[in-house]
Amino acid sequence: MLKSYEAIYENGQVKWLSDAPSVTSARVIVTVLEETVQSAKHRTPAAAIAGKARILGDLVSPVVDEQDWECLT
Image 1 (cartoon, rainbow, N blue to C red):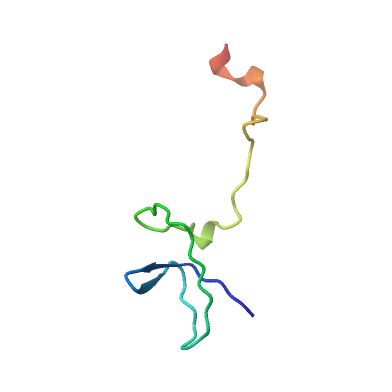
Image 2: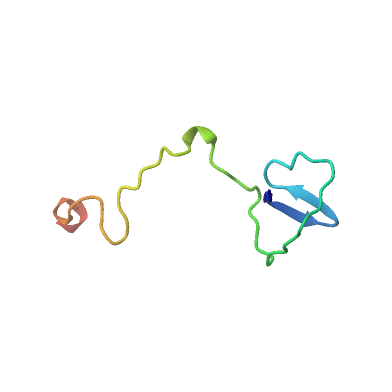
């Protein structure tokens, strides 16, 4: 089975952005992505908050009715 791991290749070294594969030797396929500006640190949300977010509204339909907007009165 194929598994994907995200890493950065820099100066001949591979820096894993998540857990490194737990193998000592393997055949690999490398796909080089276009260079992008990376933030100082790759951040991922904590496992404790996974699946706990709720989307209350969006740009097309607001969460509250228009008559409840204080800034319009």
